[in-house]
Length: 140
Image 1 (cartoon, rainbow, N blue to C red):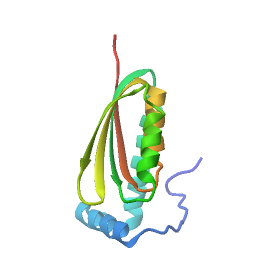
Image 2: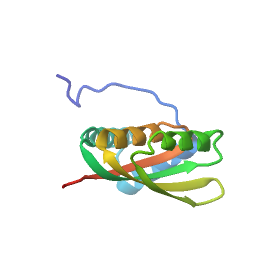
Image 3: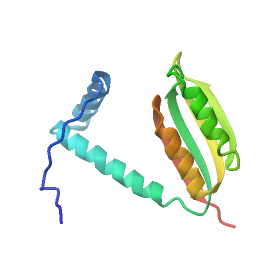
Image 4: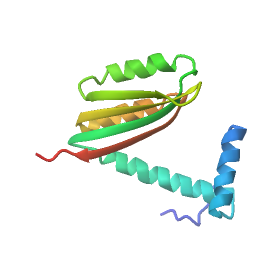
């Protein structure tokens, strides 16, 4: 059985602007090191992944997505993904945040697995900065 005291060392490459933002948050929140901040971020990611795994049954949901609309080919891919899920997508709202950043809100209703699948497909695209899925079960 592995414990958190059994540490493994890893190396990662990050864009400077991402690392700078991360360091600002670490300082603001009072973390003692980048390692502690990364461990906390990974714990949160694991918790979110487990929560996403429990999205089953009939659900009503909202996906909030932020992306770089200047990223080559991204708009076409996002449109194709959404067209693959016309049976669960009820509506979408698109807003231009800046010259190259957009936010999109997608309202969904249907099978939880399909709703989770679309969120995971969207979040895996290069140029998509964030995807947040919120769902509730439909109680009849």
